[in-house]
Amino acid sequence: MKKLLLIITLLPVWAFSQNTIQDAWIYFSNKPEANNFIENPLTMLSQKALDRRIKQGISLDEKDAPIHASYYNEIKNTTGIQILAKSKWMNALHIQGTFEVISNLENKNFVSHIEFADKTLNSSGVSSRVKKNSKTFDASKKLETTENYNYGNATNQIEMLGGEKLHELGYTGSEMTIAVIDAGFPNVNNLDAFAYLRDNNKILGGYNFVNNSENFYMGNSHGTLVLSDIAGNVSNEFVGTAPNASFYLFITEDASQEMPIEESNWVQAVERADSLGVDVINTSLGYTEYDNPNYSYIYADMNGQTAFASRAADIAFSRGMILVTSAGNSGNDAWHYIGVPADAKNVFTIGAVDPNRNIANFSSFGPTSDGRIKPDVCAEGRNVYVIDAIGQIKTSNGTSFSSPVLCGVVACLWEAFPDKTNLEIMDLLRKSAHLYNNPTDQEGYGIPNITKILEENEIIQNTDLTIYPNPVKDYLKIKSASSQVDIKIFNVLGKKIMDKKFTNTPNGINLDILTSGIYIVRITDEKNKTTRKIIKE
Image 1 (cartoon, rainbow, N blue to C red):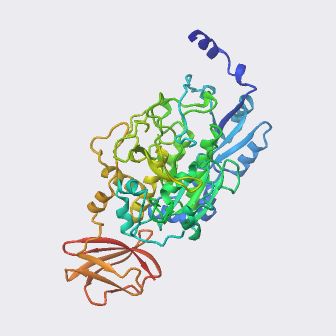
Image 2 (cartoon, rainbow, N blue to C red):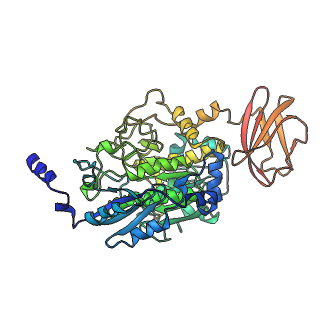
């Protein structure tokens, strides 16, 4: 067999590939009109996306500009070439065609290089491909805003993380936008469990990149289950971890096959999420094996630098978002390790534990092939409660669900600390986890502890230092044993609006200078400190 393989590798590439349709990415050398777009940012990004960049001190760059139109059109009009997807961040198109036709495109002066999905066709190709397990999932009434939920069946999965403490403080995701990228969302448009989202216009939109259509309430029901762990609401029976967040729903995964186009679809969805101003993305998908084994990855590829989606994931992080991603379900399999895009350096990769905080044996192992700790942290993913596509509350298994359980908590935590960057929020969670000083290959840093974060940052409400009423019309009253307190007020973008010393009076502090909206108030006296979200009417 080894001799036979040797003979095959000595044959010229065209001998076996010249008539076979191949997947490839063609990269362009520049963006001639990039400066025009950068000078007019609203032609590329929404104001919400720009606000997220400004808040974190992130500048626009050439990656934000679209692919040059004439380059796109010239490739599109090339006989024998089909364009399947495009990425402005990568300045690349995902194309199909024969090896010969695709290779000839490299002669165009605006083409930087071409990468074939079959890495044996690249000049630095990898000669060995092995079979691996792929997807991390198995095809398997209006609620008033409140600070005290009856989580019902979902109690353990949020209390394990301490996420209910955020809800008690009023951080339920109301100021956050989450994108869920998955295989489909059937019945989210009519199930009672998602009525709160619909009645309050919390579903802002979405797209079906598989069918190139606006209908995202279709496809595999996996996405419906995933969304339920973040935003499902069944009174007294189930509440997700970010019940008041707003959502975009994107279908990128074709559950009937496993092809590289799904990575490119994912990149398109993440770019769309960025442009719309999304804060946090949940991805309960992962890739290692493709239907064409020549396209599959090997463990050496799990370095965050090889896979198209993983490279794009790091660009997404550089735009100021947090990407929460399933580690994978290969812990018991020959493959064993995390997949794509969970291997990306700046993706927040989530493993799974059972209700008793013990690691689930199916949860994929790290580290990455270049030695980085993955997964980052863990949440409940064995016997975790979900709401299925017919509205039933049931248990399921997979890092597909530990990821959204934690994703909602991430969004609420960021809402509590609006002046922190995406990296700072992720670091808070890692450092709070129970294995931070002794991370393992399967659990990473362990299970985060939101209560610990809130206590260490003195954000948990202290009964000796309180503010009221909330909502407030004019005067915000302060209860303190001290005669003088320091008060700082920030808008939701983290900009300081007020900073003054205040002497307690019966009337409180006049907020007439504030327009209606949501603000973060931080008050410090001689002994205590508290932070609260308030609504100015």
